[in-house]
Length: 431
Image (cartoon, rainbow, N blue to C red; front, side, top):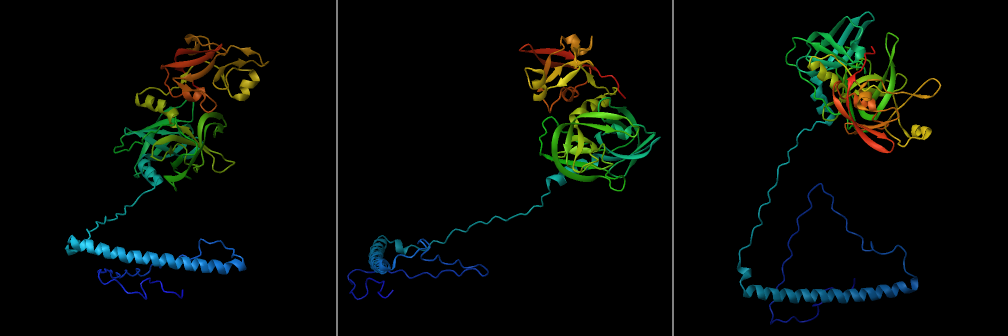
């Protein structure tokens, strides 16, 4: 710019008024290694298109003249204002005060602490309770896993691991080895209870709650994958689905139907059977039982709430048994409700048909349900307040209670909800 930006240039200052012009303070240099920020271009706010040629020159001249006037007015006001402020401060003695040093700024030390992942913590918590099980019997040798659930030597494992054996050896996580006895085999699911005697210093796994599991939450499987060469292997995944029903075979050629299972994509391999499926806190939420042979990433575990009743029975010295209502029922979904024109799309419909498709009595005479007053055609909607639907079947809820327990059963009948008190019987042994 050709003209001067100092409005006092070429004029005589008023010597009768003292002027205060502060000296510029030196600015600190940028620290080495830090890039100096570039100045924003002057035309950052302007549109990209240039003005027409016939108006561009006039706009530049008028803008430059106006800018000069504004800048000159601003500098003149600063000089006059600075002189007035100086006189006022000197009159009141403010300029004679000693300079005030800035207060020191306290800096907090940054402490870096090592953090372990959720999976590492969960595995470390349950690992001392996981055992390797070696079996021998008429069908040969086998390998499985188990969970110490009580420090008196009680171990939870799979029924197919413990059945048809003549000898069972349990290898603890610390290398000790004990011979185990089969306390009992479950009459309903693929579960069994073992016991070792004389073992001290055992660590019992902490049992979780499988009632409120959510699809998508973390799942960690621990077991002796592929046998003794890979004990206490840890695999991770998520809970892929709940309430799964599968049919499994055995070495003897028999099959069994398993209901209400947890599906997970945590790798489950031969030798994992009977090991724990745990959540992110290291609590046992299931017992691994099977893997899909024709697919990858599909494994199954028995919910721990189904195992708890027989675990407690063993601790009490009682034989393993399962509850029994004495009814035949059909799980209701929308398809069943539509086909049979049912008033509800959920629950357990007490119903049975003969070979010709005709409805027949579905209540065992003098059974627990019959004694309580429940009838064929009723729809059971809840047990002890737990609702029954397509993912929470009647059998899966009922299995949480021991025989002899009296439970409240909610039933829908002829447009009304009724409550019955049912004392559960003992499920007959099916092998």
